[in-house]
Length: 448
Ligand SMILES: Nc1ncnc2c1ncn2[C@@H]1O[C@H](COP(=O)(O)OP(=O)(O)O)[C@@H](O)[C@H]1O
Ligand SMILES: [Mg+2]
Image 1 (cartoon, rainbow, N blue to C red):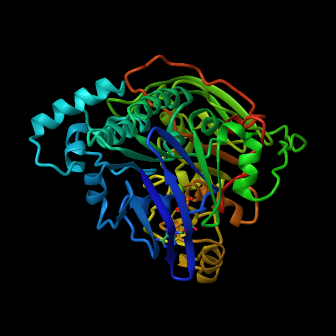
Image 2 (cartoon, helix red, strand yellow; image 1 turned 180 degrees about the vertical axis):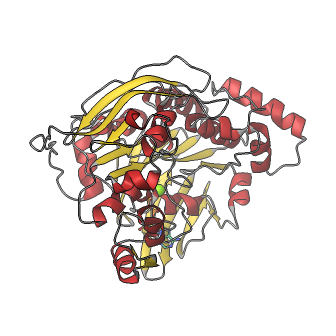
Image 3 (cartoon, rainbow, N blue to C red; image 1 turned 30 degrees about the vertical axis):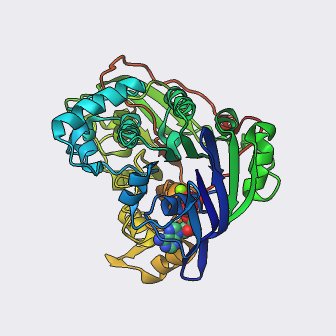
């Protein structure tokens, strides 16, 4: 269906894609694997017409294809679901879908077709709801339904399961199997190797912008795929259990909090304790207070009673985010773009936004340019860095201070089913395995 020959993308002297040959067939789920920065997004953006290749060519159904932009790709039958959603929060589901379609279809017809497509593929969506009210999983559903409404012959999904719960991912796999059975081709980017083995017929592995191999992932192990991606043997990563401290870094004492918006969840009598050297997991179907708990811990929401949140032995429930950071806490929110980082600003500027109080980057009210230059030297701009590099921005900032962060709160993405209000108490779970790739431990693909 699609073939690329020597496809190359250069940014200055940097080769993001270096002479890539890849062949995608109908009824095929083709995985595109590689570490962060390997060039996966660059390749699929070229295939979707978003960026122009520097060299090489694409053949679509045997004929040379030059794309002037994504609308031309769509008109040929190429659809894409992006790693980062392109939705307007204040518009409804149907309005967002209408904006993404090229035709001159009446809005009423679009809404009707939206409902029909979402029903056929088992991707339920309420066309009238505004996007800001929806969970990350639901937002992705809009993107998928929007792509399917164009009846694509070839669908590209850039890390779709990164934002999904295991259950949501299973639902997505059913949809993908069905699309495959309908004769469509799918190019599927993922880091989750067990998932790739289960779902995909073929895998192409990129490393440093180059194609390393094309193989049948079902005949590989997660370890052998990881080896091809990384280029070296991946050793077992063991948790450092030795450094456990007895003093709690974080204590939550009978925390209750009323929601601050009509779709929020009430926190009721939450207590937990976290010591140094421990990882505490909060389990539960998303939408049951995880967002609210994160806001209460980070200081985005303040409590009446200072003693409900205690950081390093100091009552912090009434303290601001900055004051909590000064106590040694660091926060990585669920939403990387917008909430976690300002993508158009430099990494050093991003570091300043949250690290100004606790870092050496501001002295006597002035920016210490030498310190920010050091951050810049060691990093790249988040606007150009690949997806997962943005994630640990806050934790990275803490490390630069030369002392380890004491308490970190990371919010992983998951379903926030706002209608489900069954309050589930937080549960403590020690993480001693990496669920994503089964028999192999996973190196951290972050640059911070
Ligand atoms: N617009 C750009 N300008 C300069 N470098 C870029 C740009 N876009 C991507 N890159 C670089 O190209 C490399 C590949 O990026 P990307 O395709 O996003 O990787 P992946 O999706 O595999 O994580 C990265 O090192 C990234 O920093
Ligand atoms: Mg990417």
